[in-house]
Length: 308
Ligand code: PMP
Image 1: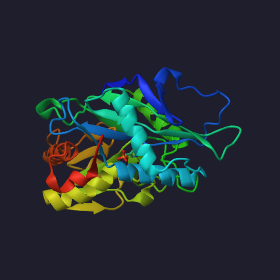
Image 2: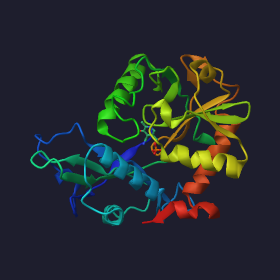
Image 3: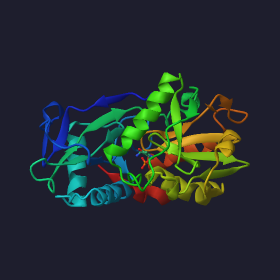
């Protein structure tokens, strides 16, 4: 991702606000079963401005964190409400009034593996959603990775566990080595799965298509949001079904979606240009509307935004 992130001075760790550089644990702690969540708080009304912040889809993110913990056999020592307060405290302690990315990280303690460390670091970031004409001007050339997405009988793609990201990192490195901007995974059946840290959607003949959860994808909060708002609010049909590699190449538009990647259009896959114009009309329309939703401008979706 080419978006600039800036680390925060303070974070929340195991119950208190501390300086981020002092958020240390022993190198002897186990790391293979750690989990995390990636959440954004956006400025209300104008994403490029400073002002009141709202956390987007807090409930869906925190519910997924609890599911990830359950899959990895960890018991959360705080309630969801307490973690919301901890998140608010982190943002306030840093005095942030611009878009913030937070990433609660949780991992078992070496001595008492049923107990966990929890840290909530934060970063400010520049959203690519709020820049109108220039936001998608950059070309994004992707490959289909030679690495397959982890299969759910080996590692659970539906849990946001760090172990899964070794898979993503290998695909990213392969793309970089070959001179591309990013990679798309096929699942172990050979169908399109997702990006290295984002869901994928294609546009064909005016219809948006995205792979099902059974294609080894993370149950993305952004994907879930888009699957609801694209047909209901924009009147564009959405199909959730397996996508073949050939369909991907023959798409009019392809974009990635996720908390980090927001709505990120792709220019070409394996050197084959996608569609006639970049970014495509449908992707642009979806991105514009999504920007309004996260900025709390859409009345019917205000409940998705939790005030800091
Ligand atoms: N897939 C993977 C592997 C991811 O890491 C992410 C980012 N969390 C996504 C999809 C998108 O999920 P979300 O919309 O919940 O951020």
